Image (cartoon, rainbow, N blue to C red; front, side):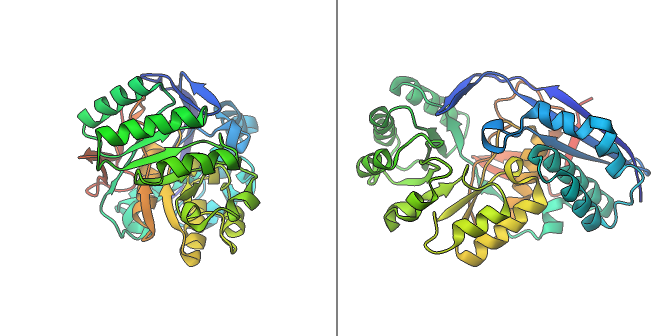
Amino acid sequence: MKISEVHIWKEALGLKRPYTIAYKTVTHVENVIVKIVLENGLTGWGAANPSKYVVGEDVDDTLHWLTFQHQAYDLLTGKDIRPIGTLLNDIYTHSHLHAGALAALDIALHDAFCRLLGVPLVNWLGRVHDKWLTSVTIGILPVAETLAEAEALIGQGFRCLKIKLGHSPEEDVERLVKLRERWKDLPLRVDANQGYSEQDLLKVYTHIQKLNIELIEQPLPAASIPAFRQLPDEIKAKIALDESLIHPQDAYQLSLPPAAGGIFNIKLMKCGGIRQAMHIATIARQAGISLMWGCNDESIISITAALHAALACPHTRYVDLDGSFDLMKDVVSGGFHVQDGYLMPLLDRPGLGVDPLS
C-alpha cells in the first residue's frame, strides 16, 4: 500500500491565555501539520511544535526543512507503508538533526500504518494502561492569581496541577504553601525550567519537602549533570529530567550510576517522535527509572501520539499532556477524551483516532 500524497503546512492555532515560565512568555502557538494519504484514501496525521530553546529548532525551521527542495515529499511519496520500520529508518537518517521534522513524519507514518491495520496505535505498541491522570500547568503568577487559576482548573474537572517556578525561590515557596493549605490532597508537581542554582534548589526543597510534591522537573540547567548526580538521594528520586534529556544517547548517559534523576520526561518534540521515545523508554526501564510524558503547546494529533506511547510503557508514572487544552482551535478532533482529569484514547478507532475538522 503506497503513499500517494504528502501535505505539509503551518497552522496558527492561537492561545486562550498567555503564560510565563522561567525563560519566556508564550502568547501564541503555531504547529507544522503533516498529512499523508495512502492510495486507498486512508490518511495519517502528524504535527510538530519544537522549542528552539531546547532543541535549536522552531516551527519555521521545521517547515523549512520539510519543504525545502521537496525533500519530505521525495522521502515518502510512492513508498510502500507496510515495511514501516524501513520508512522510519529512512526518515531518521535524513531528519535526525531536526527533531520537529522527524516527529511530525514519524507520527504521521504511525497513524497511517495503524489505520491500514485497523488497530489503535496503542494496541500495536502494546497497551499496558487504559488511562492516565494528566497534570495541567499554571505559569509563573502572583500567589492570588495562582490560587484563582487553580480554582478554575479544578472546577473544570482537572485533578492534578503542575506549577511553574524559577523566577524567585521565596515566591515559589509561598505559592506552593498556599496551594497546599487550600487543597490538602491534590497531586502537585513543580517545574523550574532550569531556573534554579543548586543552592536555590536545596533551599526551596527544605521548605517544600513536607508538602507532598510529586516531582521536581528540571530545576537546574540542562548541562548540570554532575550537580544532579550529587544531589541527596531523597531529592534526586523526585527529579524529572526534561531539558537534559533529548535523545536516547542522553537517556543512556543520564542513567549511568549514580543516575542523574529518578524520572525521565519524554517529549516527542524533543526526541523526534514515537520510535525514538520508545528507545528512551526501554533504556529507562532497564535502569529502573520512571517515565513522565510531557509536551509543548501542541495539536491533539501529537498529544494523542504521546498518550498512546505512554499507555504502552509499564513504567509510566506521570503524564503531563495538557498542550492542546489552551489552543483556540485545532485541525482535528477526537484522539482522546478526558474524564475526571484522566486521558483515555479512543480505542474504537484505528491509528490515533483523530478526524479532520475541515
